Length: 353
Image 1 (cartoon, rainbow, N blue to C red):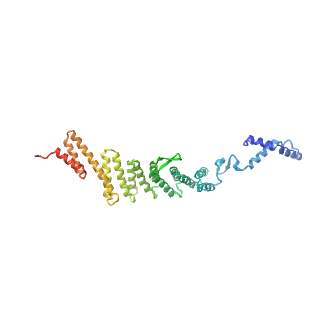
Image 2: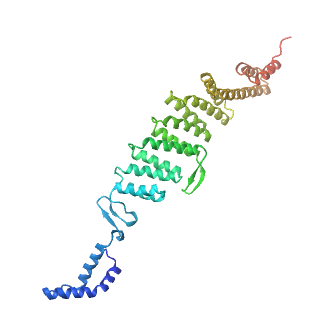
Image 3: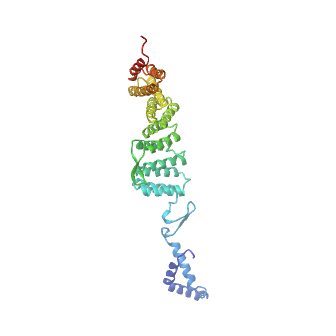
């Protein structure tokens, strides 16, 4: 009786005093044991009967062999099948918050059941339906990590890929699950990286590899972008995306060269990538744009050489200046700097009389 609250026992003692006394008197007349059957003993029996017959929903705890003791706020159905159906009922009605509560109960109490992978999947779906896309991605990935043999593997990759595209398009993600506040292209890169790792041989592997490069480009992380595009070309040489990847690789090299300031090596690398693209994909729709970028870089590289030549002129080293002017004529004859270089050589090395 230690589990029965005192106020409950006291109440029942008072309300059943008369009944207990009558019962004890009756038994005493029949068997001569009136003093044994005191009213406290009968009250204890009565309290036990009342507690035992109370509805399960009113009990403080519920016990089952599958789940152990569970409080009324965390009660689950008697089987994982019932719990999954119960949770999906809320999902189908659009009550995604309550659905998540019930799916989580299944994952807590029946985590090794056949229904657990579906519960984990629907947990992600409920966040997706609530437009909390990053949280949905996290739950989808947890599904793949925890249940890699799930029959929904390809579907989950597709949903993650679409969420990555959503963030790549410039959408924002929720902060603390309430308001869309934070720019999320960094989340796009994170999602595509996960897809590259989790599904490299799926139909979304090469797509994610390409979008990973695009995401890094949009973030201004040009070295990572170059690496992502190079990996696509190496891993999927027969992919229809190789053409675009080569162009984007050149673009990343181009933008990286501007970000690096006047680093000749980065500019020469970008020129090399663009030249390779123009040479291999001269019939591509992207070739004209690549040619334009290539010319821009060659102009800039020639300008760098011209500045170096002028530096030597100011230091009264005409021979060194001439070497750099000649380099412009030899390597960048198609730029606007070539005629200027010719003019400077004529001044520094006038023809013999």
